[in-house]
Amino acid sequence: MPSLDDLKKRIGSVKSTQKITKAMKMVAAAKLRRAQESAESSRPYSETMEDLISSISSGYSPTSNERNLLTGDNKDSIHMLILFTSERGLCGGFNSIVTKSLRDKVASLEESGKQVKIICVGKKGYDIIKRQHEEKIVEVVDMRSVKSASYRDAKNIADKIIKMYFDEEFDKCSIFYNKFKSVISQIPTEQQIVPIDIPENESDTTKNDNTFFEFEPGESEILDELLPLNFTIQIFKALLESAASEQGARMSAMDNASRNASDMIDNLTLFYNRSRQAVITKELIEIISGAEAV
Amino acid sequence: MSDQFNYKLVTPEKIYLEGDAQMVVLPGAEGDLGVLPNHSNIITSLRPGIIKVTNSDQTQSLFVEEGFIKFSNNELLVIAVGLDEEDALNNDFINDKIENYSSALDAADEAQKMKIQKKIDSLKLLLN
Image 1 (cartoon, rainbow over the protein chains, first blue to last red):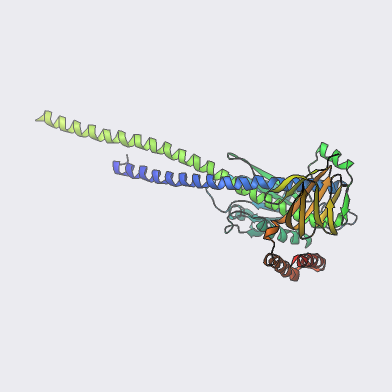
Image 2 (cartoon, rainbow over the protein chains, first blue to last red; image 1 turned 90 degrees about the vertical axis):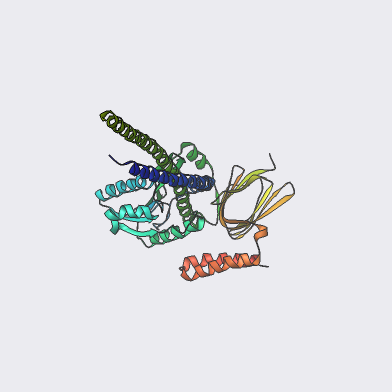
């Protein structure tokens, strides 16, 4: 049985841990609000972009076999997977869930004989997969110095990847990130961005089929400029969603931790009081039985 | 037939501006473009320049660096990158952008060089 002093120390250490987790929860809550706002306010842009691309692509068929970001070039041997994770830990299952979905994908691709390359955005994902797939990781993007992701950050990442695409370093590209649904729910999402996976929407396709557009300059020139932009936007969206999800995940993880700590403190205090009472009772018995013996 | 149409300017960060307008003048890639209600459906890219939104005698001017527009069903969508109030537009601001593009120019291949040069040229026209 631990001594009273030991118990007291233990209660003290749990209390100070709880203080830290509480503080982290508050910080995450404050950051979450900002991250959530920016993630939500960026959604109209990517929606408008999707709308625009589906208007163009519904009537577009590539004339040449040129490599482009819209339709790919029918090759399917090298897959590029981009993993978005956090830079810091203590955020519950945030990193491991999205990494697991990437690992499943890698396994299924390898089974069908494809070559896989991985880009890690965020250190935590790299830490998890480097043990198993180190040789597949072509790049780790360090986001530690970035406080909140800006369009410029997304553009830097996207430019690099687009260059790799035209250097024929990969044929298909998917991104893996946590989509922010609510504070307690983040959905690990896999999205193919090269070639673009246009969601088949019944009402949309009929609407687009009936509309004829003038293009200025030509259709392919517009696509040439639009597709890299779209790629950047998808990266940007993933960065923002991932940032918001991270804060949400951290907030609920720290909330759980604080609650666990109070449970633990309650139990320990109860145990401490009991032991203290036991010591007093024991001493009393000793005195009384001593007095009786006299 | 209404004399207004709905417009929406979006940037990667947020919806910058939306509402009704009587006329919007845009710096299209192949020349300025005035959009009035019931314009034919059009998709075009933008060069660096000024967007002017006119509604009931009020005109708002915005600087755009690059972007795309789509007009259909009396609705104008502008997808822009680098949107700013015209007040922010001064020579220093433009020179900064020109410098950015110029440094990109060295690294670019032939096809891209033309595009970047075009952008620099349109930016230079905005200098005063």
